[in-house]
Image (cartoon, rainbow, N blue to C red; front, side):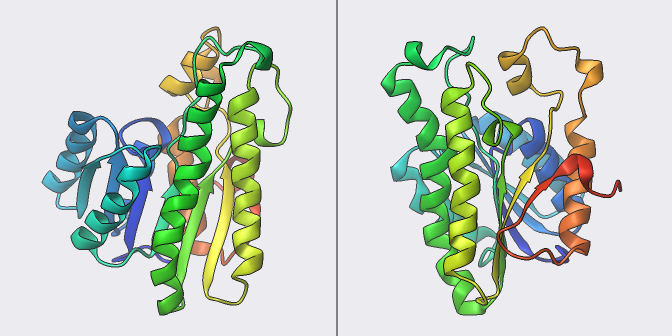
Length: 240
């Protein structure tokens, strides 16, 4: 799906991969709304892009808060029109250092699920309805290798990402032949604040740059008519 002049909503867009996707999509000609909890940070990214002549808007909201979901969808549509591409990027690790499951508080586990799974489900429920009326749209779930591998201490995050992958597959199965596609992508290990919080001993030089991964993802989305329900690894996509 070419993104030029498409209305795109990216969650978790103030830092890391989300910020890189926000920038890359705007520079590719999309009309982009970025969402993040940090108002100053998301408005700074949007302001930077707008000053460069791109169509970019920042919204301060919490995807993990049920009461924020309708305002996010409504404000995004008011800013850029009906959403053509929805990118579920916002994620929470939970407390760090990452605890064993036996040491994970139920409230912390629930918060991770609110952000990583229930938020995307709620936002898709609102936005996908309009996509179905228009017979087109793309929902991208940003996954993780923790969704497919059982890493000790990554319990809450890994469970949430495994469920997010399966959520995409179920959406795809239920809405087959509707014109709306659901994809999952594992961006791989990147030099981000989240990765540093989870694995502070990791060498940043050994990690991918979010900007490089974002460029690869956006190029892939624009050139590959992937079948709905598929899962990809960014490292295996053709380099841009």
